[in-house]
Image 1: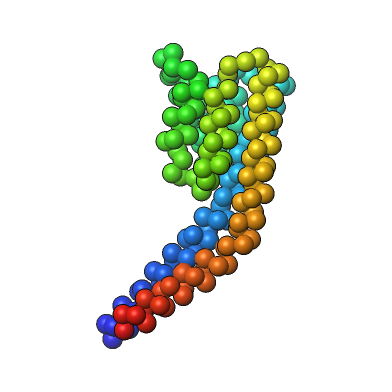
Image 2: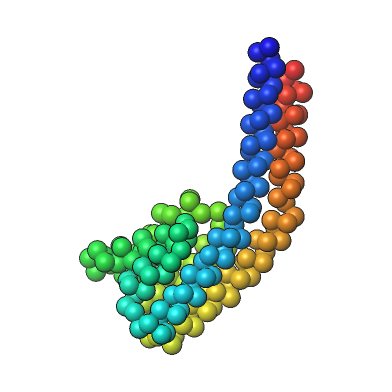
Length: 172
């Protein structure tokens, strides 16, 4: 009886691992899409709202209740109590601190860090160019993420179950 219970637990653990990996693959395109929409909203705040950077980041982040939105809100909070620290450093620290909560990969991180390196350094028109560049780069990453999701999501679900079954067979 205990052996059967142990085998069931191992099978369940393998299946859950597979489903977790599959969920990470499905969360990634959504988070990249959220980042694109938030950058578009930030562009609108900069161009049409003439909103100062901390306010624009806060409004942008609060418009989305996602992990990506919290990146913008936290940056705005840090800017308000920055003590003279540069915007670029604050953005970089925030991305690094919140990155483990996101399902995005290194390519998206590089795009966001590159965008943050230009944040607040130039006039409105140049800032819009940097926002649009980041959006176009993220759109390419989103396409890649969707391809990966279609290709590997079902595989991970099956693989988790099969790995659990293999461990059960090897042990017993």
